[in-house]
Image (cartoon, rainbow, N blue to C red):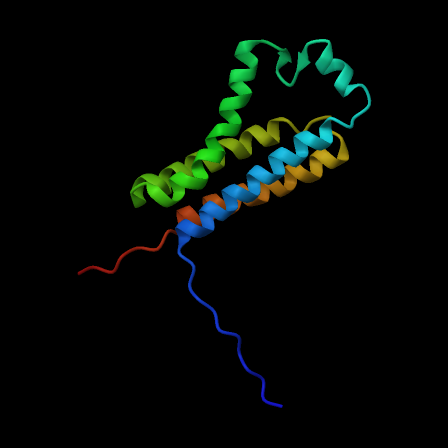
Length: 138
C-alpha cells in the first residue's frame, strides 16, 4: 500500500497569532471559572474581596483591561498593518507572560497548570511575531 502524503496549506502568521490569542482567552476564562470552586473563594467575593484587593470600580476596570487587551488582539492581529501587528504581539505577549508569572507564587495546582499553558501560548505569540516572514526585495 502506497503511503499518501496529506495535503497541507501554509497558514499565514496573522491567523496563527489570532488563533493563539483565542486559545489564551479560553485559558483565562476557564482558569478564572475553576478558581470559583476553591473553598471560601465565593464567600470572599461576596464579602467584597477580589484578585487585586477589595473590589472597587477601579479594580474591576483594571482586571477588565487585562482581559480586554488579549481579546482585542484576536482581531488586531488580523487587521493592523504588519509592522504594528508584529510589535504589538511581541510587546503584549511578553508583558502578559510577565503578569502571569507574577501571579504564580502560592497558586493552586490547577492555576499553575493553566498559567503554564498560557505562558507557552504567549511565548508562541512572541516567537511567531518575532519571526514574522519578510517580503523578498523587489
